[in-house]
Length: 463
Image 1 (tube, helix red, strand yellow):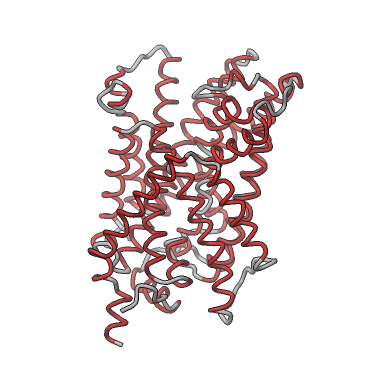
Image 2 (cartoon, rainbow, N blue to C red):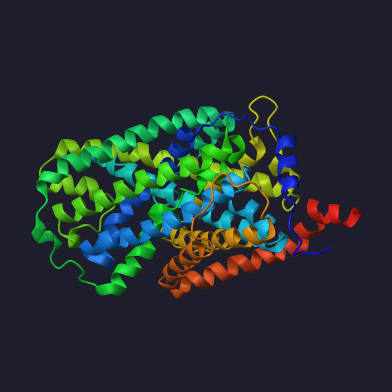
């Protein structure tokens, strides 16, 4: 049995037929899922942090670099998702392109990405919620709103919102999509409101100096704000539940990226034009900027919209984690309980409950900085694998129908790899060390359990 053996594409499709998930989602549903996951803590929180600590007004350039990287990655995802319309995202693609051991590594990496991202999003939602309560004259006890490392017992709001999202996902993806679409509409509405209200209050003097921290600051800012683009890949995790995945998945990805890039660049330019970058090191920079120019009602409305919007980000992030767990269990690399489907709701219910509880615990006891710092490196690593996978599959599976073809192969994927490596290089050494420890733990689990229970390995042994 070879740990490098690749999975035949027909095994992906056979597994899909046996699972029997409902196919309810359209391209607009997928675009809303991607926007819901991508537009959240990044635009509402990280923009101010990146501007104040790393890039200054040149955070606009940081966003452009992040946007270019995300756009290239999105196009590579589009080709693979159209070829293999199954749940599992990068994990499933890597299984076909590189073999089981690489698929396990990337799947293990995706677990890290989605779990810590979901925990960080829940923590960010809690911070906005606590701040809104203060504005309403209600001060919640620190013991129930702060994690132990910050002087509290637990972050109860983060735990409760995660459990609420878990319940929504438990009852069915179509219900989840409807809920997400409503929240995305509210979120986009308040962002557009900020753009309209903020535009007349731009003071060009706030853009001077434009790059106070130099090129290094711009690149570090790009590496940090790339967290704002994490989530669009969640579109591909829903391919198995899409009506026409060959058409709708690429279209949903492209729509998502276009909307996200326009919003981010607009908000970054207006935010740094309204207020000096030195003042943006706050948990709610958009609301702060509106208050600073005297639009208090707009500030309150944006805060409410941020709370709603971050919930949609959490919903899609947890959704992606659940689907990764489900597909890896379906392949025998994780215990089969993760792949169990509810007889009524047709959702992976046990996997949903386990994922929700794990995310709630992370969000409730760990600070947001620890949760968030590993997310970017895991995401960029996954994007590198996807990009290389496009090149490999053009050689090894040339006859598979490609409803969407990435232009400029192999140069376009190699450009994507270069962008991702450069952003990873800009991350702190401590992040690399933690990432290495996580991957080592994953390899131990693979050789101790997964290799011996793998469906592909068992099939190879019988052949």
